[in-house]
Length: 385
Image (cartoon, rainbow, N blue to C red; front, side):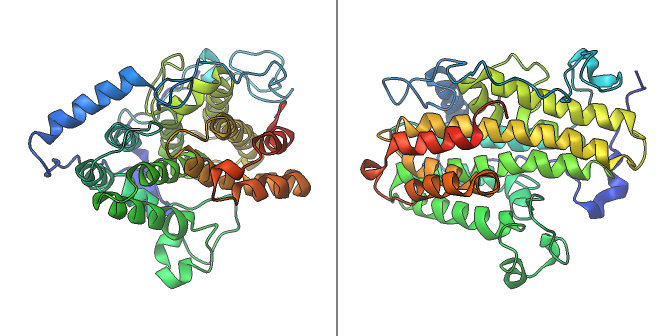
């Protein structure tokens, strides 16, 4: 075991997009006793549901593990904590614990903001949030150094790089690279429109679903980005881990943020993502952990394992929602999140991807061929993955 590195190592790499600055939780200023209202909403949401998604009622949570699949097993060379046969050297992750580089991880506060927004807007339920709920949710989103500050610059590193970092491009230049500059070009406008419409009382359930899907999209792409840039900024490994877990050190907890959604549907998929995050930490332990990494082949092996697991995690969310199109804004969130899978789907099987795309393009949920959509999804993102 190597000595754990403590402290904020990312300062010297600030130009590389590190996630070091702590979000500042600004007081919610709309309505009386708003802080107490938010706390109450969080408690209520935790009681009613994790994301209030499944079951005979739209407010009843799915049974944990209902989308587990016996054929979902690690690949022979995937990192498994403590395994003697996975081909990985012994490393810091072998105790199945994520060992932080820094004691404080600012990303945790951003995931906490997501959970506050989730509670305020009643994600996944038929309960319509009020206009004030949308105003307060947007205040949580726009906290200093919070979610908005990262959504506005988020890049999806699955796509080729732009000539400069997206945050250094003008708005018009960013539009030339919509897939790479996914945060400012695609996710942020969706959020701005949904918050604005909801604050006027327009289509509250539908706009809550748009906020939910856009933020889940951000939480889905962020671990991949952060774990790749961890090669030069060790604290980005921490950010990648926290964007999924919300800072929970115990994977058996019900989870926060995106982890909450995945674990509710498939503990197996949740564990696979955890192992992918531990693979990244293992690589960084083995590869000059106090400096710049040199073994990018091992990095890519670890990040690929994480990426496949994240794709499976998003898949189980989309698949379960296909069965629940009558619940509030579920179809809207399904359409948005299903489209996020299209890049990898097209890469794997263009014909099945086109079939899924055709169903997701339908605006009327009653016209969706759920059986065909699920068949395409299972054919593209089934197990093993």
